[in-house]
Length: 117
Image 1 (spheres, rainbow, N blue to C red):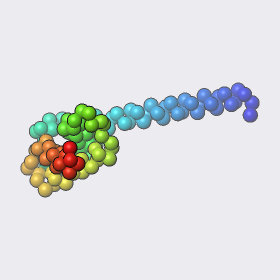
Image 2 (tube, one colour; image 1 turned 90 degrees about the vertical axis):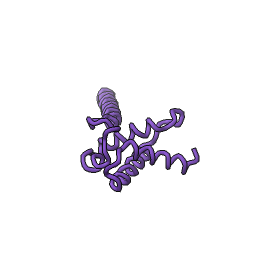
Image 3 (cartoon, rainbow, N blue to C red; image 1 turned 60 degrees about the horizontal axis):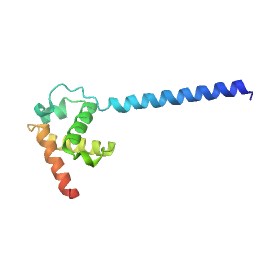
């Protein structure tokens, strides 16, 4: 392969890699954007289950988990966010008249006591 073609190939591959990383970063950030317009403190469990989309529930669960955690605990993993969201969803199905914030606080307290924190 001659040098000009090799150089063009390397530049193309580098550009593609930078584009893919940039897209991933935007996507990663966007999943924490909340489009749910009702304050979470005013959101009922019925709304959580019936009205919120999965991305809205994920962003809300992230917001609630980050607010409840000690700042020194580090940033939660996707698995922790998803688990917390699933627990809220399960509890909200059983108690649709409850507020999401009350439900999330009870779940977080339960998780803390299980972990011994």
